[in-house]
Every structure is written in structure tokens, then in C-alpha cells.
Image 1 (cartoon, helix red, strand yellow):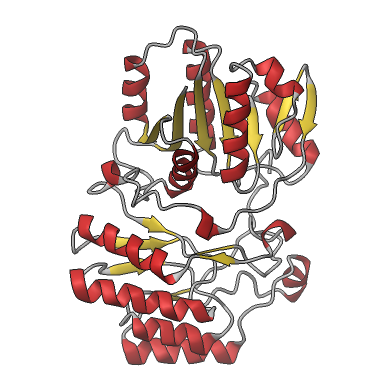
Image 2 (image 1 turned 90 degrees about the vertical axis):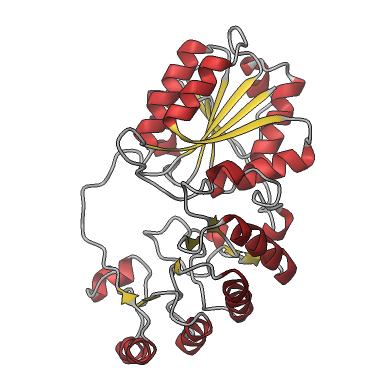
Length: 356
């Protein structure tokens, strides 16, 4: 079995998305923990993926599983590469996952009927569902018809022109996902891509425009202190002092545990003089704690004062409550005193993209 995990970006002139492929890295680390002898590769650059595909020789592609992390910025790229792979390896299994997928069954069906090169789409978290799917594929000798008859859980797919959507698996606790960094799966990306980590997964808010606004994500899971400290230490040893750190949390600084994470980052900074900048979306609640986190990190993180919209009707429709005006000024005053930067978000109306 050959497993190829892709979080692709355009790279023909410059690298368009310079973040490490954490999404597929975490899935890959979970698979490697369960199946240590699995041949698993992770790709970010198209050129390197194309080179690898020319090197492997597996006839019609039976036993090749290629999975794509699908976002709004790389969906078209994923589709075109998937088409090429299906032509080169017609019996390969193509799996998509990621947030750029309709929440409505009708939208999912329309998308999959149009993009027949996609054999399965895994919505929401991918660790459990992907692992179960590749185990089932192996047991079925990679026969797509047999796999689809057994209705793998947490999958959307087309079977004989009929749309199938199976039940969701339980969410995984993020502490149960091993570190792709410590497993060495991200080593080849250092020096060219910016480290991306996640302390907390899930969001308590129900903002309807956000991929984490659904009830699926309402429970918040987080890593423990030892995990975070060890992962940060591993990354720091491989980074240049000028490298950034990107944190994928939705509301960093809002939770009590974030003060501990901030202290661990500060400890790493003192030891390795890294990172020099942290890019993260800070929480809109618990402004006093967010400010304390910023102070602990000595101005490394810019504070967000996102309003999304100032129209009260729009805010009600999208289930959003903005940060209070007094709190905005309080945050800005803190920024001025500490030298910390800040930024604001506002959503502008754009045409609705197909399949969303």
C-alpha cells in the first residue's frame, strides 16, 4: 500500500502558501502510529509530487491511496492533480477531505457528481475516518466497488450514480493525535515552510459563516503541557531564529490553558531565540486574559479586534456578537503601551462560490 497525503500549493513562480502541511501531517502521524510499516509520503509542492509519481511504478495504481486536504485556495489545483493521477493510475483511490465542502447534502452530491475523479470525501476531522477507510480498502484488496458496498463511515461518495452519505464517527481528542513533528514527518519542510501548530481544536461559538460554526465543533479539545513543550522544543531546534510560528487555534488567548501555552512559548523563545513572530487569531472574549497572554509573549502576537460586520441585522443572521467597543479601545490602549500590533477583520459581500 502506498499512501500519499497532499496539502498542495502553487509553486511555479513562488510558493503561494508557505505554511507547513499540518492538516495531513496530523492524519499521517495517526496512521503511522497505528500502522508503523505503512509507506506514507506527504507533499506540499506540485513539482515534488509530480516527480514522485514518475518514480513509483505500480502498474494501474492498485494499492495507491492519494488524499488531498481541500481548501478554498487549492480546490481547483487538487481537482486537476487528481484527474492526472486517475489517468496515470486508474485503480488508485482518491480521497478528499477538508473544510471546502458543502454542509448541505445537495451541495455535496452536486460536487461529487461533477468531480468523478474523487472516490471519497471525508468531512470534518479526518484522523479516525481516514484510518478506517484505508484499513477497509486494504481488506477489500483496494476494490472500489467492494469498499463502497460496505459503506465506510464518515464518507460522502457516488456509487453507481447514487449519492451516499454515511454516519459520522466520534470526534477525536487532539491529545490522541501524535505529533507529526516529533515523528519526523515534517522534517523535509523546515527551511522552506513556516511551522504551523495547533494547541486547541474546536470552537464554542456558532458563527454561521465559519467552518467551525457548526455543532460538530462545539466541544473544545486541547493538548497537555508536556505534549506542547516537547513539540515546541523539537520545532525550535530546527528553525532559524528569524522564522515565524503560526498557531492554528481559533480563539488563542481566550482560555485559561492558553496562558500556560504562552509561557511555554516564552520559555522556548528564551532558550532558542525563536520564534520572532507569532501569527494567530486571538479570542474575542476574556480580553484581560488575551492581553496577559500577549504580555507574556512580549508583543510577539498581534491582537485581533475583529468586528466582521457593523450591521446589527447581519450580525443576528450570522449568529455573531462583536467585541464591545469599550473592549476594543482597551485592547488598543494595551497594544500602544506594550508595542504590540493589532488587526481587525471585516467581511465584505462576495459572490457565493459553487459547492459551498
